[in-house]
Length: 265
Length: 69
Image (cartoon, rainbow over all chains, first blue to last red; front, side, top):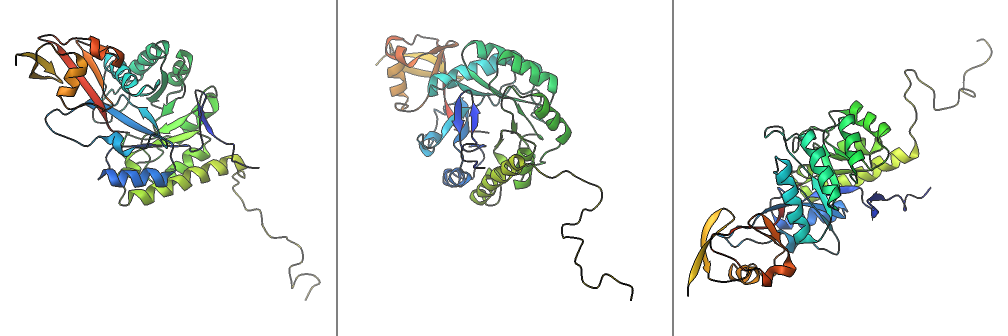
């Protein structure tokens, strides 16, 4: 079975890579460019911020090749529905894309999403023609409400943003995967190393979004490459259909024909 | 050259009198950048930059894109 046609589709847009990569926290633009390249990603997130008028700064977008990477603007830093909606509109105006990664944060320390505000903002943005991909917790009820208001994907966190803790909510993510089949599910936040991404994909998730795990690794381009393989390995393992787990052994080698067996000595 | 006072990105600034958004962006050295402009809490679409005049006391937000997850 060829997996060449196994693509991530969000709102009708197809991506061969199931890895979405953030552009923040790299030590330099050069490192970021190499990491994105080695990750094999086709979709990168960007944040919306005021231009610094007091200093001449290099523009991030000069380093992101638009022919290779699609941009997914986020509403990072927004703590209210109004801020998120305002930011989404600014992003759409500047980039001309209706895609928005919706974040409405509820708490500074954990950066956990305000689920209620996220649902409200998502509903309004969908009505205004946005393709909304919300960052949320692994709450099934919240996910269902988001699907009902018309989001294009649901993106539950595995652990706090930038924490590197990996999948802290395996059971809840599994429940979500079984119960939400209308839209793609993308694990977003908390990934620390390659095995975390593998597990997410083995769970049957449609993709993984990560930033810190790559950007702050000692060798970001190498970690990006590891993540590329992790996403692919996890996906193939999922599609291949794993063996069930058993408590006791089942021999792999045949039981008959072993030397020294047979009549009594 | 006469000027007027506006607030840009939370800071008061003197800008040339009677400029439109396009001219302001040029004045600020931002031509060619991927940015969006809000004037008094309303987005000014790029198509309207040359026809939208900046007025004394306007509150403007000019945003661009930075790294983020």
